Image (cartoon, rainbow, N blue to C red; front, top):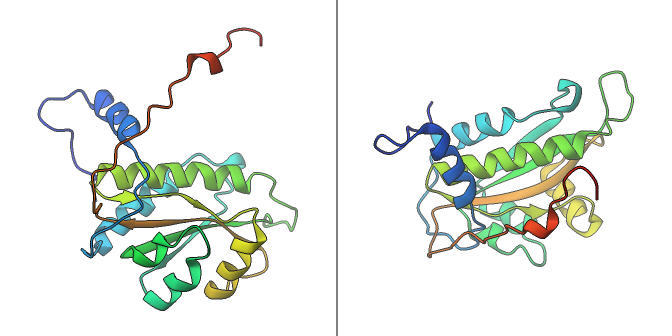
Length: 182
């Protein structure tokens, strides 16, 4: 499954940068379904993320069932219930040798960004809604999904076709950059 090719004769590296700079948070969706093929493409992109010591602690729960989405839509993130599909990005918090995996949150963050970029490339919309480290968000998610003890929900990403015209934010701030020393 391919995410498609750049439009026209556009330089592929420019297409990648355009996708990154076009990514936006979409909180309102149409009722149009997201296909299984699109979901698999998005998850393949997520799993292509870098991972500390290549542990790949990410796990994904794809949720289409309305009652489950409603259980996940706690507080500020009501848009989860309105999206055709939500992907819960989870992390295994222990390594295979039983030791804690201190990289699981960074690895899940990298996977989530890849996921969001794939969503953008496919012409869909999504928004990153945090779970970890907020117990008030994690506990209902753990319960609704029946997560094992060593698996924590990192974030929930509702996905669908955008219902409006969301625009990316210009987050470029040269004052946040330092060279050689602070």
